[in-house]
Image (cartoon, rainbow, N blue to C red; front, side, top):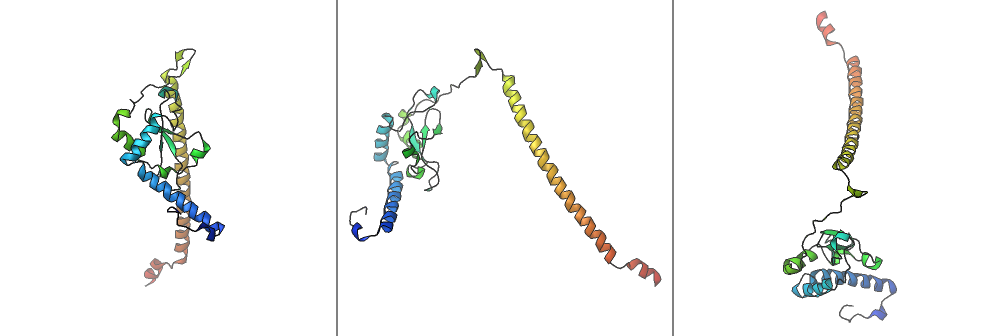
Amino acid sequence: MITDNLDEDGLDEKVREQIEKSARHLFGMIHARFVITSRGLMKMLDKYKRAEFGRCPRVLCNMQSLLPVGLSDIPMTKTVKLYCPRCEDIYNPKSSRHGAIDGAYFGTSFPHMLFQVHSNYLPSKNTERYVPRIFGFKVHDIANQQRWQDKAREEFEKKRLEKQQQMNSNTGVTRQLKTLENSASLIEPNTNTNDNKQ
């Protein structure tokens, strides 16, 4: 099919679909290798400059261009995501058509390889963070501390309940063992009384 030497007329529908699916998969894996070659990186850099992959939805990234990235190099594991080099985070593509593309067809290394080769296009990391405010006043750190304490208390309570359940199940096993020991002592003959008689 790839070399146009396949006689498609002689194939039934099911076989043709399977061949087309395999060809698409093969093309995707070849694409993942091509984009990390010097020629592939140049082509992708041009697309990055034109922001063909979209712009970062994070307000503080100031419309930073995105690059496609896979979360796994294993095919049919995860769909492609968009990587922002400014905030160093990933996002889902807006287009459902792009969102259905296998992430392995770009690979996990591509955007990082591009900035290793073309480091002058790497934007400065954005350290600016959104500050929550109420009526213009910054929310006090004690509010964050209280949220953290509530979360820590919930985790502690969860661990305590798990430990209590484990102890209860262990107590049940111990009781069963004691019952078995008592029943075994009733069955065994009293050797001490026989020795005294002799």
